[in-house]
Amino acid sequence: MNIILLGPPGAGKGTQAKILQDARGMVQLSTGDMLRAAKDSGTEMGKIVADVMARGDLVTDEIVIGLIREKLQEGSEGGFIFDGFPRTLAQADALGQLLDEMGQTLDHVIELQVDDETLVARIVNRAKEAAAAGQPVRADDNAESVKVRLMAYYKQTAPLIGYYHAKCLLERVDGLAEIDDVKDAIAKVLDKG
Ligand code: AMP
Image (tube, rainbow, N blue to C red; front, side):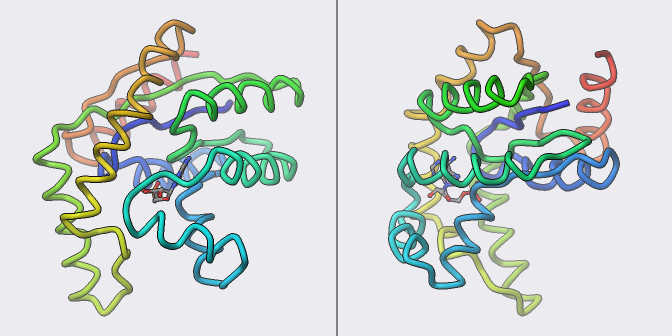
């Protein structure tokens, strides 16, 4: 089964993707994690994307589609959880094509619904907690970048809600609920078929 977790930054996509990965043997594909890894290892691509990411803007479709194509080729028996991808209509089209070519389907798109104030508070909190624990703080977890990231979401990613609704793939889950309750709500969607 292949699924997309859709929602603005701070909605809990990464947290739920990790839970699903552990519980169901699915593989989490987070383009954000892949891009951060490229940046940290200092590859050419990493250098290109570093500024764009720190600002909170989206990196090019070409780069992220290339990353996803590579990972899909590695295969996953339990299926894939797309986390933070697709973020544009062009990426959504590309994903559909890649899955088609592999003879696979997209089974569910789960939108984690949250409100903006909670998002900003969550992200700022994530940065504070990381700093207190002596962990690295994401370069884009600051109030300035969060605003740019939210704007990128509404302008470029939110149209995917309609896109997947039209394909009868969209399911909505309350992302403001407790982590365990969100987990249960997602499980209900996946287990109904
Ligand atoms: P995330 O960890 O998903 O919040 O992503 C962090 C940053 O990586 C985003 O703000 C973008 O700059 C970049 N990024 C991650 N995924 C994508 C994507 N699918 N398309 C474009 N940019 C992305």
